[in-house]
Amino acid sequence: MPQSGGVTGHVGYDVSLMNEYEQGSGPNVIWDAHIAVPLLETDPDQCLAGLHLEPCECSLSGTALCERLFEYESMPELPEVEIFRQVADSCRGRAINHASIADPGILEGIPAQDLERLLKGEYLRSSRRHGKHLFLELSGAGTLAMHFGMNGSLKLVSEGEPDPSYARLQLYFEKGDRLVYVNPRRLGRVSLAENAEAFIAETDLGPDVLDAAFNSHAFVAILASNKRDIKSVLMDQALMAGIGNIYSDEILFQARLFPGTAANQLKGKRATELFRAMRKTLQSAINSGAGSEQGVERLPKGFLLTQRHPGGLCPRCGALLETVKHGGRTGYYCHRCQPT
Image: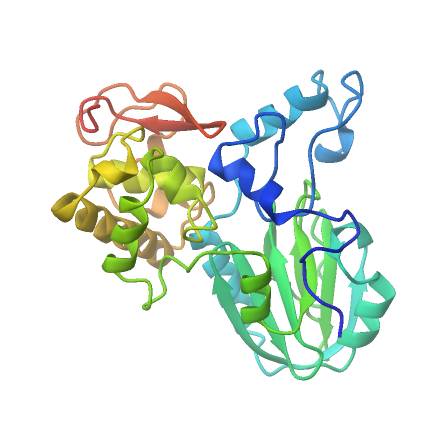
């Protein structure tokens, strides 16, 4: 059985290094957390065109390009991946007639021809989300583990419809429709794991923030043991999985907390209120069918995301939103509603 992620793979990634990106350490390392793609050690005069939507028109190069991408592009977070899970779940019980992998580079730990062979004739037994990862349990070959990198998605495409742009992997069903893994920036990853639990343990992911077992006591304990700013702690996938740069801003706005507040300074009522705001914000986004960029207009009134851009105004008080950097990511907040 090919194994997921872990210590081996086509780029030989190191989980401890991947964690550095969202934890804000390792200033010379830029990682999409828990993805086996390092974005450094390149010729500083060479454009990283592989990270661009073709054709490349970028005048940046090297690490500057990486920073620009992470600055302005969003990574699918928990609400989006939950939407993708619902798409996958609509195919539960269906047989995979065959699989087509257009880009073997998105695979981790298994050659394309081997995965195509193993997937043929498999049934989709169930789907599960953990943080920003999606797991498709198969009838006998194990579990497909998917991470969507930047701007990735999962789509169900009807027979006869053209392939979506940047389709990297397609699972064809008996009626000709197909489940398509789309990844424009090629920063996502698909692997074959024994099961979801093995993948989660191997990649050092923390508990899913919406898991019923992850209660307020566990959340408060994480805050109490961490001196870093609360925004970085919320985004640390090894502590709790699912929240990224976009929704950490929304959660902190709803809780009226300044992003730079030290996590261990949030005690008692303030900590439990943040936990409730986190749960309510993410569930509201899921219920609205909103992601980090798509569908934000469907979010309830009073959400920050519709104004989360240069020149945006606070939906509560109308003040001009300000920005702050944490862990290499730019966050938005209201200086009136979230005072330091």
